Amino acid sequence: MIEAWILLAAWVLALVGGLAAGLLTVGAMQQTAERARAQSHPVTAVLTRDGDGPGGNDRPAGGALVWGTVRWTEPDGVGHTDRTRVPAAATPGSRITVWTNGHGALTSPPASAADTAFQSVLGGLWAGTATVGLVVGTAKLAQSRLDHHRFDQWDDEWARMDTRWGRMTG
Image (cartoon, rainbow, N blue to C red):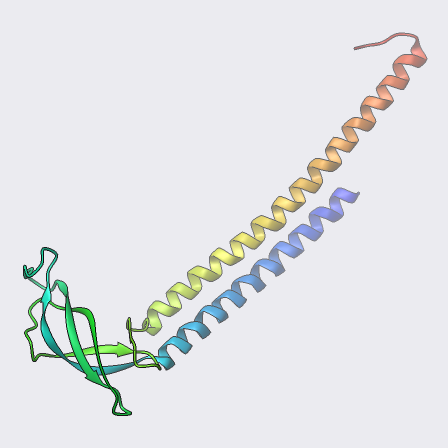
């Protein structure tokens, strides 16, 4: 009877807990991404020094990115210079769009709405699955402990019955 209640409680907790954990994770991840999008903004920068390829000044072909030094001015008029990844074909004086955070430091571009939605759903699925796994694992552990207790009771009962009949079966 206890096992039936444990099983029922486990199913309810797994369903409700998994759903709640998944939805909370989706919401938290989307909120974090929205905050990152709100704090970063694109700024046009000027490449001040040629980008360095993997072997120093080697220039890789195609759409590869290399390290280059850029200069930009924030909307408040403060100038900045820093190194970032730039297209290999860019030459000094080229205008490049970079992303900065609220403090004027370079940052990576924020994730798109589609990427954020995909990552949030994936995170929600992982959180929901982990919650269900935790609940089911706990229920299985409780069931195992009850089985162990029942086997001990059966051993004691068999020992009493053998003694009453005057012989030992084991």
